[in-house]
Structures are given as structure tokens and as C-alpha cells.
Image (cartoon, rainbow, N blue to C red; front, side, top):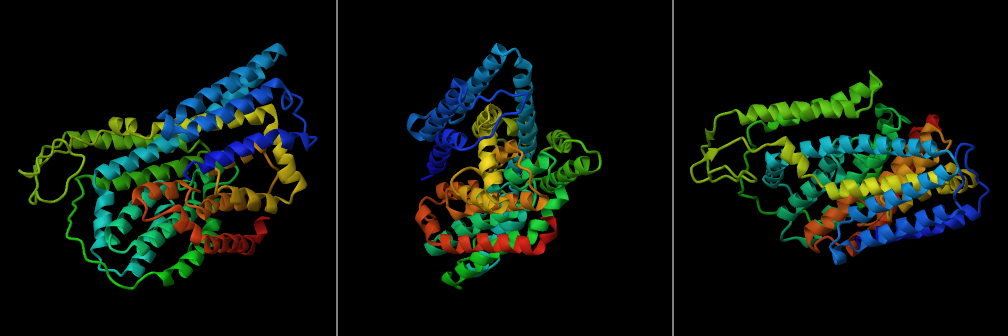
Length: 481
């Protein structure tokens, strides 16, 4: 089921020639129209084969990034070769560099964010939050709402996968004797993380793309708060009645955050402020602020390495990822937080897979296929209908890939429509368990307690929340259309 999204992506690629034949769209005078050229069909076939190979990752044990990076390289080599034959290779080279710059900014932005999150995890910040929630003595229904709201607001600044797995571990721990609670709470977490991530460029990849391209300012996304809140509240309100009001047993586990954890949280806030500030006031790429924040984290980690070892009074408490910690003696060494190692430990396979997907889609767009699709979606259809349909398709196709494709189309739509697209792509992934990173992550974490079929049973109420949130957007943001 997890690879169904790749399958749907493949079907979209196969339909591209049909879309092209159905439209009279032509390339600009500077670009060659290669939609009916052998290079166009070669690019389609290569990308399809790459997606199929990525889909078979578990069977072949070949990491999904390898075929995608290779495919994107072959696509652009073929494009540049044809442009050389026509005496204008520089045009294709410039377009490749433009796509590469877009990816580089995205990569560095995400890299800094993920590095901070890994440091927070190693400093037991998330474990401390989990244990704190377990010890509140809340009922299952109260925990359902608390975890949902925490995920919703945390997703403003933290990616959905991290918040989803964090709260997923909480509901797994407190609901070990209540499988129904675990299932419903996980559905709620998926919906809340996707809704919250649509309000801020820091929380969702599609929102980050729109901000990164300068279409909307950072604060302009905040008008989606009420539609996104409604998107979360509608299904949660209906699902809560299926959850018991009994209280789970209180955990006896204790977690103490490592020294410097609160400073890391503060530095993360400073980093976000720098990213927003350099964009709003200096009109520089937000990645400048993020990289500056990474430098601050590096300096603080150097400071921690110079601290003398300390003896902790309660050596029985839990410490994790601390190889130099002698729990029996209670000696805690703080030299283990190494930012360089944290960067090396990121999920580079996924980051490189996204490189291949972005560059490959950029190549297909330069060939002319995306202009053809744009003519159908935003020329023959109403933009509202087009954005709603694209949002629904994010239940099957990665929303970042879809947003990048739309941005490559350059549709002439209003800010209200861009916000609608951001909303629908963000929350559309909640319709199915495989529709977003939080859902896929929780499918693996819960080992069957939360399943695709469980999520599908509640799909009607999630769809209701999807369309109600669209209605609220038109109601409260009518002036933007």
C-alpha cells in the first residue's frame, strides 16, 4: 500500500503524451518543443522506469534515490544534447542551473531543520515531552485532543513526520491496552499534522516551495489558520465519540533532558526568526538565516564539548545515545552532541530521491509537458476546480512533487488561489494513510495497530473536513480572490 503513491505517479507520467496531444500549447520562442520528439518520450520512459525501480526498493534492496538521480541525469543530458544540435545549449544549461539552485536552497533549509530536530532528539527533549504527557493522568479522549492540538501547533515549525512519530510514540505508550484509541489517535495525528503544516512554510514542503519562489510572503500563509483548524476539528469532533473516557495507567518512567537542551530550543527559535527576518527585511533567501542558525548550533555544541563531566544524582533515570555515559556511576559526559555527525546521519536517501524527482520534473517541464497540462488545468478548467482536484490527488502523489510541478507550470492565478492550492495539497494527503509522510511513518511505527483500512473507514469524515475547510477559506479570505 505504501508504494501506491509511486504507482499513481507512474500513471500520471504515462498520461502526459495524451495531455499534450489534447492541447495546442506551444513552447516559448526561446525553448524547443520536444513533446513529440524522441527526447520527450525518452525522458518519460526513463522517469517511469526510475519510479518503478524506486517502488521495488524493498524487494531489490536498492535505495530509491539511486535510480531517480540517474534518471534525472539522463533526462538533462539528452535535453542538452538536442539543444547543442540546434546551436543553443546555453539555454538548457541555464534552466538546469535554475532548477539546481531551487533544490540547493530547499536542501540546505531542510538540512538545518532536520539537524536541529536530531539534536533535540538526542538531548531527550522529545522523550521528556512524551513522559510528561503520559504522567498527566488524562483520559483516552482527553489524550486524543491533547496530542491532536500539540501536533497541530507543533507542525507550524516542525515537519509532519517528526511530530507524527513523536505523538505516535505517546499514544502507543499510553494506549498499549486500547488498540481502538491508538488507531483513532493516529488518524487524528495525521490530519492535525497535515493541517498545521499548511499554515507555515516551515511545516510543509509544498508551503515552503511557494514561499521559496517568492509567490507569497511568510506571514501571508497565516490567513489559512482558520481553514486548517476547521480541517482538523471537523473529523476530530466526529471521531472523539468512538473513544473511551477511561484513564490509562500512569507511567513510572523518568526522563531528564541533557544539559543545554533548553538552549538548543532557544537557538532553534532564533534560527527560525533569522530565516523569516532575512526574507522579509533584507529580501535575501531564507536559507541564509537557517545556515546562520546552524553556525550558532555548531558554536554551542563546541561549548558543550568543553564542559567538565558532571555526576548526576539519579543514575537510574533513562539516558539514550550517550556512549560515554556511565549510568552505573551517574557520570554524564556532554561531548556527544556533534553537529557534523548529526548532519551525516540525516535521511540522505530521501533528500537525494527528492533531488532526482525535482530535477526530473524540471526536465519534463522544460521539454513542454507541464505547459500542456497547465493549459488543461488552468485554461480549460476553473482554477478553483483545478486546485481542488490537484489537492485530492495528493492523497496518492507526494504534495511536494505536485507543488513543484504546478510552480513549473507558472499558472496565472491570484494569491487566493495559491493559498487554496497550498491548503488542498497540504490537507489532501490526510485522505489516505499513505497520503503523507506522517501517515506512512505511523504505519511503520504502530505495527498494525494503525492500518490503511482503519484510516479508510474514517475517510468520509476527513473528506468532509477537506471541503468544509475550502468553504471556510472562500468565506474568510474572499478579498484575496
